[in-house]
Each structure stands twice: as structure tokens, then as C-alpha cells.
Length: 93
Image (cartoon, rainbow, N blue to C red):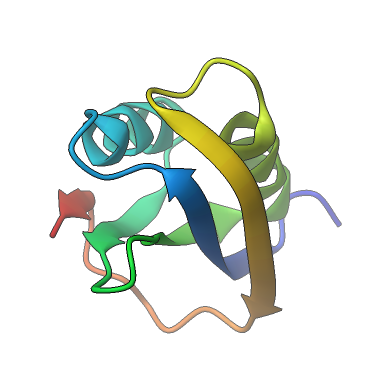
């Protein structure tokens, strides 16, 4: 079901820190009506947690893997799980 609420955790690797990537993720997530966060990790990746309708989360994943991101995304790992009830909005951490 495309309207089922899900939780997507994605880890983007490549040149994704210091290039406006988290801000870009936040803007796309808000456009898609998703709640969650984008966080810089110590190993250079950015962790994206998004909750909302499955179709919107799948679109976010497509955008993360697409050519329009700031910097350069070399790859994206993903994990799907049950929603935990993220606070409304989308945070950059």
C-alpha cells in the first residue's frame, strides 16, 4: 500500500558533508510531507530518517540516489521499518 506509514533510514556516502546536502534533504522531505532528520555521521556519511507514506519515502530514496543532489552521492544504503512517530517536521543535525 502506497499510503501505509513507514520509516525509512538511509545512509548516503560520498561527498555529502559540507555541501548543503542536509539542507537539500530537509527541503525535499518537507515537500514530500515527511517527518524525520538528516544527520552528519563521524565516518562522513549522512543518515536520513524519514517517516510518512510509503510512496513519499520511496520518492525520497529515488531523490537521494538521483543526479540532483548537492555534492556527490556515491551510494545509498537503506533500511525499512515500522514508524516510531517522529516529531513533526524535518531536522538537520
